[in-house]
Each structure stands twice: as structure tokens, then as C-alpha cells.
Image (cartoon, rainbow, N blue to C red):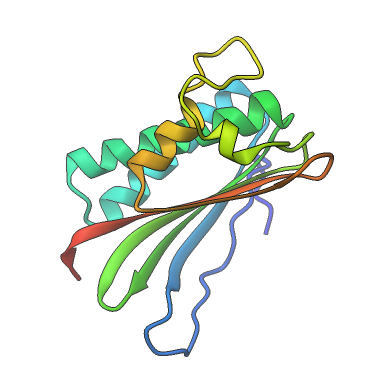
Length: 158
């Protein structure tokens, strides 16, 4: 569903498979401008509060989201960031999925190494985002874009 401001919101989804991660709430945001980056940070912060995360974990997730969204904007020519509040075995988490249709990453392992950069940055964004999250996966193919999925789990049982 597309809202009047150009951002999209997905309906909540669930699965009936016991023990499987189940998205409870999901929103998708476009990442095509500097303003979108600010909007994404606020939306991720709100989701972490809703999920019951403390201030330290809120900051970790927001920082990771900011780095991943900026990469999609700068290197991928824009994309989307989906925020999901998920549950797994009684624990609540925040899953971020950042997708772009940019040039892709030719060497994902190198891109995850601190100091690796293809631009003017310091090269800490992708690796830093990985360290801030509990689960992290990058799927990329040169010429076909990149999808990064990162999840942070709440330490308190829900």
C-alpha cells in the first residue's frame, strides 16, 4: 500500500510454523533522499520502542539502520528499508531488510572488512552494522543490486 507521502506500508504478516520467526508488524520506507534517511532513523527508533528495547539497543539498531540505508542511498542509487517487529521462541526482535537495485557488491567479504570503501567514506558502515546486530546476511550480485537483512533480538523474554 502506498501512502500519499510516497512511502509504502506493508500489512502485518504471520506464519503458522511453530518456532519460526513471525513478523508481527512491518513497514517499508523508500530511501531516495537525505530526508528519507532521517525519516528511516525516526521510524526505526519508534519500532524499537514499540518492541520494548532499552535505550542502548535502540541506539544500536538505529545506527545500523542508518548505515545500511545510507549505503543503499549512496552506493545503490536509493532503495527501500523494511522494518519488522518479529518474534522467535518467545523473544522479540527488530529485523531490517535494506534492498537496492544498484551495481551490487562484487566482493561481500571485502566490503564487510573495516576500512574497505568504494567511495569517500571511512569504510566502517557495513562491518559496523554487522557488529551492532545479532543476525546479519548480505545477498548481492554485481549488476543486480544488494539485499541486507539484519536482526537484533531483545534480551528480555516477551
